[in-house]
Length: 92
Image (tube, rainbow, N blue to C red; front, side, top):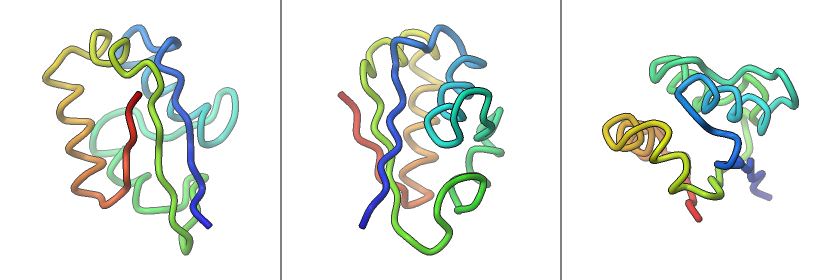
């Protein structure tokens, strides 16, 4: 069974709030799940709140809000990190 973590794009207003929202989605309020792209890569390998031996994926709701908050370059880099890490990312 795949675990899906949902990121609420309405909570994202800048880079820091994006990583905070990832942390909330995975580990609850105040949770950690990276603070930059390199740390995100490490977190997506499993552990840090995600299953190490079971599939998981992410869903970003209000993805246009996230794209606006991060800017097109960083948003594209985040999407690429998920793709190269082999972690499915759904956007809505």
